[in-house]
Image (tube, rainbow, N blue to C red; front, side, top):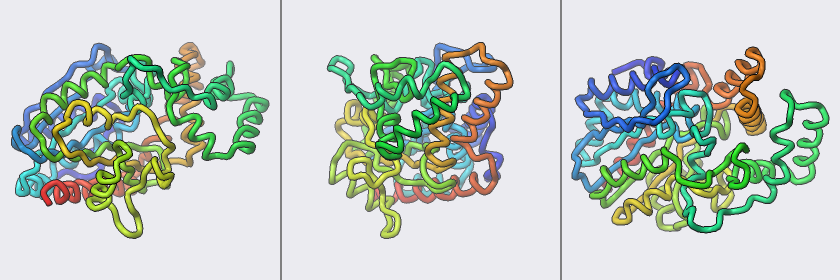
Length: 364
């Protein structure tokens, strides 16, 4: 075993090394997918994949991290701990479930402490058919100049204008407008892109390679940034399919805490476009798919959005004073990673439960 605190890392390079070392200790072969760029410290970037179990298994569970790069501090810690967890590994093996660990879906964002890819794209808004007209987020278009003002911190006038918009339309409408996904402003927040990103294409290759034979496929995609601190909301991740949602609730739900959904308004997340789970339907059509995003809370929603506004402003102003830039980067990490033993303990405990439940669901 490994201590919970030991499984987590303050930087991508360290997280990757811990993941690779955990795979070696577990006797697993790592399949690296080298990213074309370099990390913030000049390190190699990679989406690393390891399969624990039979390559021809008909029941497969995917556990993935860092879809939104900076959220990888959490997801990587869960993966590293799981690879050292003999009871967990034996549970999956005994029930004939292979586990595919995908470490750092978005390694660039993880290394640079950003939520987006090197293309400034929110990966979880990037899985659309780009040969068709893209969605138009008219509410975001009106907010865009307010969200990314010329100066940072925002002037009192700018903040008053944002507050006025929220007061008029409501916090939920503000969250939906900003986070739902937009495809018009390539320097903006929650930009879904105008083509498939490197991470999108690479993930599809991983699915074709490792999930083509799966008949039942489960997926736990690890996220942070929404909801009460340390609480892992289980958000249904898939198309608006009542049967799949019922399966997700049977696996992971409870009377007091059912699996939530963006489709019925029960989730803390807004309705989103271009979800990463769309790749499963397209690349693994033979599989019965059941998935969740396990979303751990950190800071209040408006604080998280404020951190994201600052991060995007800094990306547009790379020559910002060092003290200001360092403060923005620290604020980003705090928005997506609560650096305490208590939070990490909650994260691992809830993820471990969800993984055990997924194995029971897949083998039931």
